[in-house]
Image (cartoon, rainbow, N blue to C red; front, side, top):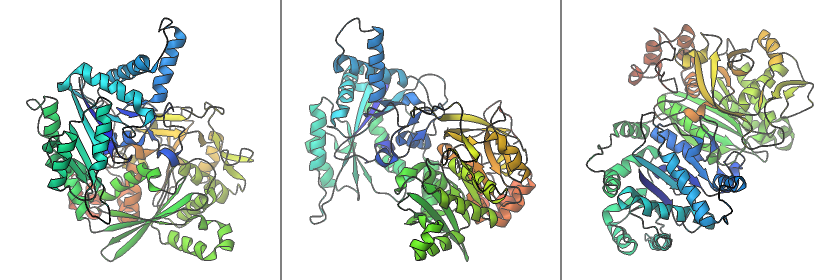
Length: 605
């Protein structure tokens, strides 16, 4: 087995997760209970693992399916060692950081490295390891020592270290400064690890003199100094590395030049160029308030047509807290030849109370929503801003505005429908009011009320389509079922489903027991869809999430989408695609499905 280790220096957040099993040196067992304000969004894997956001980057860029074991944390390592100590595995020895913790780290890395994640048979040839944080952090010291030992054990031809660092430019001087990187490399070498490649982040391309200085003082050949400067979009990063022969430098260090094939990045090239050349724009207006509720609207300009997409969500006032949601939206917009831009505005003003306190902001927020062509409500936890979400869902339902609710967003649409259509004024979610007389959304019976970590309904679950000709089924390629990832504690109350369906709300997708509601639609509405799962986790560049793509397409190509989708995809998809999505889509009829059908799975092609 050969290993590529990616470390970071100077500051965190340089993009190690984009440059490269992820190691996070925090004591939490996983990322499930961590605040998004401190650590960003939680990414959920097929096996239910709640992991760092970087693993989402790996899955999207490499199109692989990772497991919870691909995320190693200090908490997991210490828990494993302490369990061994309690069992008596160490035979009375004094348990110490060295060798017991470092040995456990090496064992974990080596056991995970031999498990393929690309669906191919046999063990992988190379394992890529990203060490979180920056060199010098006290919490990462045991990992640094374990990796030093690992590099010595496997030999120099089987270990490649890439150090990601920052090359700042002082505004007054205007000179690219190499001293921070020099000190970072010196610190790394003092700990027993010497970088073979430097990946230097900078705003502008590195000057030759800067590379020469880095080479001289960091003991790295100039051809192994990679410059990852700012690019128009993230899809340029693989092309940037390829153009600097990063793959050759890595293969040379690992003695794989004779067996490795040249990288085929034509698809990435086309994608990056397509994004750069888009002229139709999607302006996303994010709104936030003291209650941490946001609404966004997306303005789509195409010829003389101006449309707006409204996005409503909870929990954060910074975009990196909803990275997966925006990535899925980006994939869908690009598939529809739309270029999104983001602008944040305040949104708690949708609620009635704001009409008295801030009437101008209230009027502006409602005007923004009324100009929207689409509303999306993603997942979240707690009751903050729920009133504004319910009002947005009601507006979308009553005014035939395409709507997509994800997890909490689906539950919001059920609460709103129960109140407005069925007249259940006290209808609510148990999450918001545990004593509500009519709890249309209830706490799941198998979920713990006392422990928070790893107790939700997590991971990939099968959803069966109960209505074959529903919109969602068509978006998924007329499949009989779909596997999507979940992360929730509450669900639609199955005892009230009958009354809701009699009033017109249809639950077209359910779990295998038929008792758990997974997908809802509103017949007669252009696109009113709610999903209990999180489709954004499986969205990929070039293969966007079906619900996201459906919502964007319905909002931008309103009449054509509604007309042709209602007729059914088989035999009519070509007409729909030709009319609304351009000739470049004529041979991509089933691009809606998030993953192609596997051999043996049923589905209409």
